[in-house]
Image (cartoon, rainbow, N blue to C red):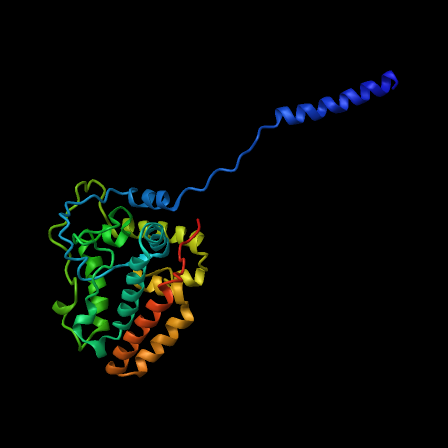
Amino acid sequence: MSKKEKNKWSSKNNKKNVRKKDIPFKSKSKPVPLKDRLKKVYTSVNLETTCSGRCECCRVAMPQLNYCEFCQIVNEIWDTTSRSEKLRLICTSIEYFFRNEFEKWGIDTLVKPCMLLGEDGKCTYYESRPLSCRIYGLWPDDMYKERVDKFEKAYEGLLTRDEIPLNTQCPFVKRVDDSVELTREVIEGLYAQLDNIDKKVGNFSDAQMEQKDNYRTFHDWILLKIFGEEWLSELTSFMLAANKDIIIEQLEALKVAVSEKFSKDMPDIRTKE
């Protein structure tokens, strides 16, 4: 090899070495766990309260929650609980879905105790409880009145305002630190943050977000994840057409069928982050 060729070869390899040595390695940042993203939302405003854990609200109803909140809770359930506990949640979800037909069932159907209360009557997943649980008792009076007004209008002629479950907020719940006022704008901002997480976790379209398809009850989310939207639509059509006796008969038959099917082959409805 001539001197000229040696210099050319040496120069070429030096350039390669410089590129390898001097270009910094760019590592991909690890995705933030869903639990941490939700915690950031929940703690962006101090929502700590004087709640004594009477759970009177929990024994009446399960609130609606964002899809991302449901995913966090159901992932914990599917990771830690027994098959029989999962089966209990599925069957209770079916029963609660049937109870939506208020006129056929009566006033008691509006009472749907939270399925996540433990044997001690306390919330089993308190640290992951949704925003709606965290701000119950803290809503500005005008906003809470609007929420009750919607129920009163929906059940006009069937229920008086006083018969609507949770028609008033819990008087025992007060904020520990109210230096930042919990206004309509602040609350809407918190839900907007959850909506943004929903878009990424659930791939919801703008149209779905506009229709609030990302905001449902816990029991409806379970059924949607297991059986799908089409099955729920068909079940709703059946409930509208059938009388109460047939609905009760079908409910019991469905719970038996589901128990037999999922006693061995439990569906995995966890959401991968």
